Image (tube, rainbow, N blue to C red):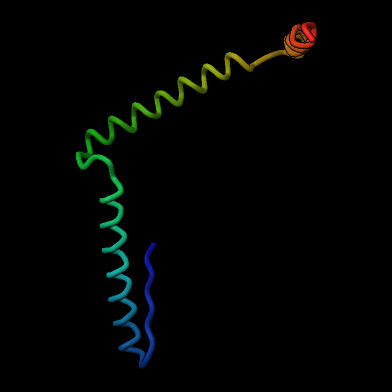
Length: 84
């Protein structure tokens, strides 16, 4: 996010706007670099790729577990409330 402001005569206002926007951009980029856990982009990419594969695996497991027909839902409810 870039934040800039300027006031005064038009030339001074435009220069202030450009300067404060540039300053905001530099601060944003530095904070973003500090936020990264790993400075190596290839290793960061591999970690992110592994995370997405794990999430996809979890989604597939949930889909298998909870993709039920109406009869299966009724059967599960009967089993759960049979013991009470």
